[in-house]
Length: 434
Image 1 (cartoon, rainbow, N blue to C red):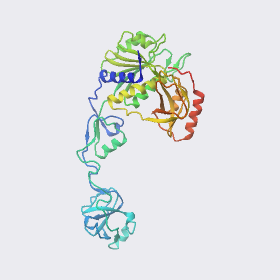
Image 2: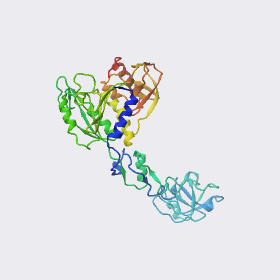
Image 3: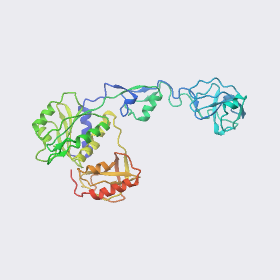
Image 4: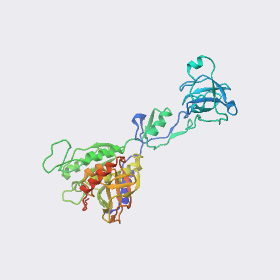
């Protein structure tokens, strides 16, 4: 079966929506420190107003409402530090007040210390000698540099809505409201396995003809970064019977998704394809490079996705299909930023496929990193975006505008871009594979 990228993205999203059993129910209550990156399971109302009381926005002098129009000379009252409850302010006096300190009763404005004469607070020694005065500009506007109670949010209002992704700003708001713990949606659970007689665990001795398993680490990190809970299955060899037994041993309800890499293409030893030959799993050819071979369906009612075995193909498949589906279903992770950029390099692309090149985006421009091949992990590690070349486009020239999906930080060091251009010259392979 041949699909476009959009068709397969919709198929993966539908599979997770209707077959994963994930509904966000069974909220987990976490302290704020543990809730970063999670999605709220319900609305959270503000238990207090922000600010909870009228306070000063500046270091300066609190001025009584009766004195805003004409008076310019004031007797200095007792200072008001932050955290104190001040006495009422008498007309004709001005109280030194610190940023964030509670506005005294009767005060209606704060004049910054820079506008006072003298432009610094009187010392304790000065005040010990007797009453001191300060001159302030005449004609002070009511509310000047005053933060009114509830001006940010009023008590009882919704501080955050269900489904909100909790980042630093959201957690900071909840902390300011005095909320100590929040209900969050449960994590989406993924069982991750890799296949292939040729793969070995990183850190183990490498036998002749073997390669280290990059896919499990690569996808586990991507899934965890996307907010999923990941279980790793031991590496499986190229025996379809062993793989069928492994699939059959997965307890019902233990995971929302089974994800494998490798064994789904057109080779003679495609173990996943052989093991699932009599299942409802569909093996598709998606018009995408890299990552064309794809599998999706259910195994004993559990959703299953099969990604290609080449590492770059696997992570591109995750970014294009699984990560967006997780966002739609769980609210986590946040969508990747999609930007328009000016292409630095020329490229060729198969006209019948949506090609995804790795690139380094900076200052509105994107330089290609490595060639189109799906094994170039060094180039992947040096990139921060995917460069989209849509179906129907066979070539692009320097200066053409392209769409990029940002996947990493944007460098500020110009030498980083120069290094990537060197890597591109060394790593470009015009042939390109799966």
